[in-house]
Length: 111
Image (cartoon, rainbow, N blue to C red; front, side, top):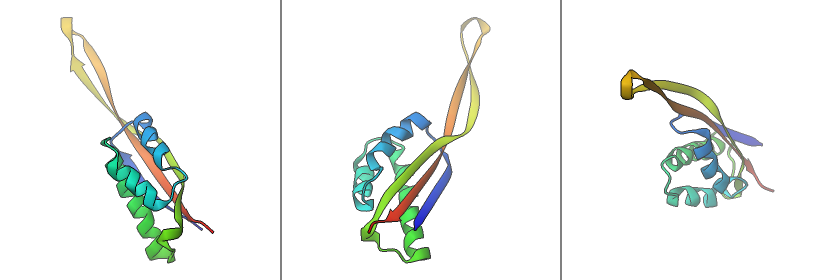
């Protein structure tokens, strides 16, 4: 049985989140939590919270054993983008895009 947790508005780009997601794909839940705990990137806290939510969902809703859980999938996709502008020389304006991402973590029981 698969259990998932989703966050639709993570304030980071898809590329930055994929670097962190590669650390926890196909890992035990305990090992993945350790990886995210000691990762120095800012977005690792967001992924850690989503993973904690998936673990809580599996335990409370379906009664799964935490020791047998592993991260089956981490899906990261685009969400909304805030468009801002910055004034530059000679009266010109540059656009600044501030991307948000959508993260889904799926955990499953081994064995």
